[in-house]
Length: 118
Image (cartoon, rainbow, N blue to C red; front, side):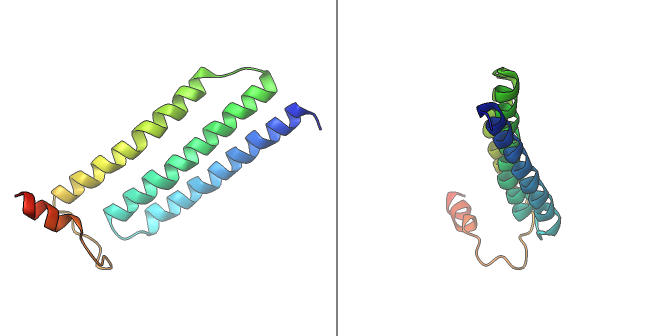
């Protein structure tokens, strides 16, 4: 096996693992009981899935075409920065809009902090 074939294999493997994480994320979004846990599944595992898939695409393109794609790198950076921020803002807006927690939630650690501020 040449170095290019190994690089292409690593890229394809990362794309496959990213696809698996994407399916796991979709299952979490469907199965979790409330908006908070769904947003957690959507931001954490989906971010990892997209980062793995884009990293795999970058490595594959790099080894197969000997080309460094700035667009893929900028896509990786964009997802890495915006996905956690958007997830945080969605959860914060839901909490401040008084969206109810799931019945299985044991403790609300944010409630006493917000009551103390007001």
